[in-house]
Length: 299
Ligand code: HEM
Ligand SMILES: [Ca+2]
Ligand SMILES: [Ca+2]
Image (cartoon, rainbow, N blue to C red):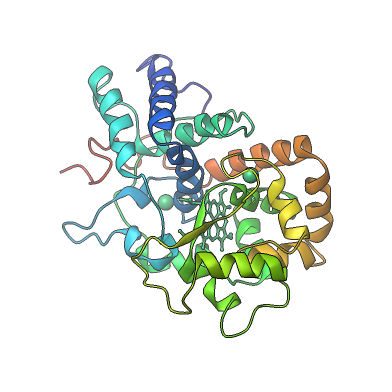
């Protein structure tokens, strides 16, 4: 089973090494901390927190990163930097899946988000679930009921799911995920002045998917993991269809209102739900392996 401080005997310095690396990376590239939050979601929700997301295509494995649900995922190469620091002190001891979990928990406070106490002891999987990703990661215009049922299936209730998507208080969205709400006509649930701003960010109805055309999720506190997301969606400034619907759906609106009014409550729910997500169906004991290179299964 997962436990607090799993590496106490085998690599007692592991949590500190990860904390240090996450901090150093954040100082160089602030967006890395944003990425660690999303990386945990995209790894853990798909079957298991098993670092399947990190596998690159090789020897019959097709990387999960080839799924368009993982579009825009960035900074995974810096996981290799964290792993290298661990390998230097404790070779083949700390799993890539635990690096994902602890990076997210160390990244959150750097963004002004909550502290989260995460267990360790996850082992790394040996397969990619690329064919099943769309069952687990909703599309940007998914319905609220499908969004809630996916989270329910991993033990996250409505309140927790509303808190988790509050991660859209940091980071960015590429224009491909927004233009349907701007062209040919503006989505009436979008604030008109905000729509004009977004059209400036995304001037074409058919953006080049590889061009770096994007808008920040939250223009007010761009790099702060706070409850501004809920204030934005209540003001009709949600970027994705699903963000905007969260504010109006009967099941989620009461929590949106509560989180918009109370950052401490948002943080408590966000931390609670992230911990549940981080414990989704892990490989433990002798299952899986400790990868030597997070990008490939061991030979
Ligand atoms: C379940 C419904 C969700 C949907 C449909 C969704 C969809 C998206 C989309 C389309 C983007 C923009 C990608 C791009 O264009 O570059 C994005 C970004 C992001 N998402 Fe979500 N998301 C969801 C939930 C979550 C959750 C639960 C978390 C974390 C707990 C999360 C964290 C993030 C972060 C941090 C970014 C910004 C990434 C960056 O700036 O590099 N999302 N999401
Ligand atoms: Ca996974
Ligand atoms: Ca924010």
